[in-house]
Image (cartoon, rainbow, N blue to C red):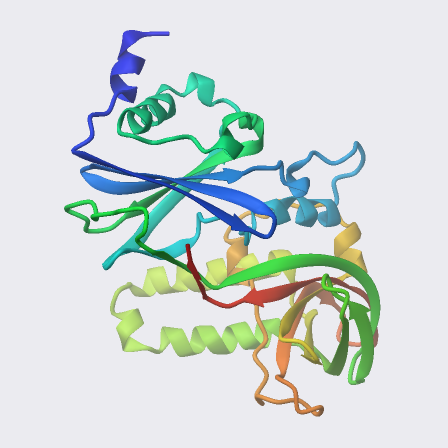
Length: 344
């Protein structure tokens, strides 16, 4: 421990505002402590915290793509946190969130900056609510939101409404449902979603995508665009072309194809399919730009044969051109959460 650390952790606020308002939602409690101004305005919210299941280390064994996808799911946005709110209205003042951060209070006894914040809020008149007084810090997290272009903290009194706008979100639900796909054939199936509702799905078509042909056409179009070509020399353009083909070769060698799926669902959700082969495989680190290969499939029509929104998914597993049957899996689906407003 050095005094330089204390010096860096110590902050002197230009202004401080106590709000002290508890929000109860979905059998959980959240508490808006207040705001500070020190060059930029920040708002602080205490939230319940549980260790995400997907962040718990997997059991010993082969670390295949299935395990990796499940673990990475822990980084997806949670719908129960205020970290991703877009706007706050306090009284008549609109505050637009610029960024945010959050983390467990488990180790905050050693975080002097947060301890100082709590002391300064108490000194400014914050009263810790009864329900919060005996909560273990291991079960709580502190969310900090930074607001853009705030020169003065808003005027606030307890009777003033606070309106919070939540950004649109997408929640992933793991399914792991085996689905055998046949090129050129349609099929239907159903599953029960997280709400207990039966969701009917219709696969309109399964096609093989000639990734090399599509890539060559895209490169030809781009490399003939003067807005693009004037930025590079002939040698640089050739290097870009070779780099793209090299990256493509690592995941989909020439003469192989990806699988495209067009589907409809009785609910407005997006499906994520993977081949069984991919899920069993061990992740391989490729040289070059692997992100170049992330593909999506946009159907030509808005509605499918069942008059439902037509959507697309690409299984990025390389298969031979004579492939007919693909052992696959509906690994997960994504539920869309639209922007919504909360008044507290």
